[in-house]
Image 1 (cartoon, rainbow, N blue to C red):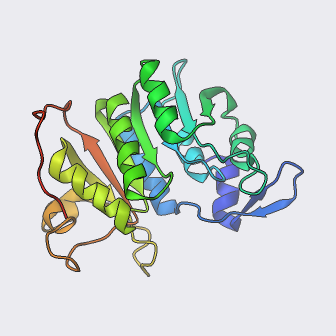
Image 2 (image 1 turned 135 degrees about the vertical axis):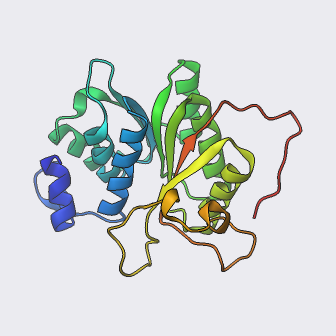
Length: 243
């Protein structure tokens, strides 16, 4: 683990450009970091894309997990990173401090434009992390574009999947797209069991109770990971209802 990431996880603080302390708010958990590492290992990730940078915690986990060679690249899409009253470039600075400046490409655009740009440039990725605008339509559009540039066998994680809008997108993915549930992390509000990444082969009823038909009986996760099984081969009028 690189020193910048270790500092954030241990103290809950990072550094501004002038070296003064900055409290890190809304960072992913170490448990979710391990899920990122598991996904990267599963798909032997060399190229990745991330929507939403913030203070850079997830990006540090991702860059730490990529297979390093001359083609290694991590694309980051975030229109707010350099806003003075939001993150003020601290996430990018953390990646620079950690030594990852040469493998990242930062796209300062809304995600639908940034992802469309990558598709137009014929970029393909092995791993994706979606943690941008959290309304249902934005997350669904993010997934739609990610799918178009994700290799078969690649992995995608949707952060905050215990939020209703994002949980709904996860239900759509399982019901309508050729993806397998790979694993999830504890809900943000859960106490205890925070160190265990849950994989499908450890779930008694597999995915049917993760995204079930009866509200209140489903298992919720703070983040959910899916593996792409095949290209999109649906008919033009395909639709399966989801809850």
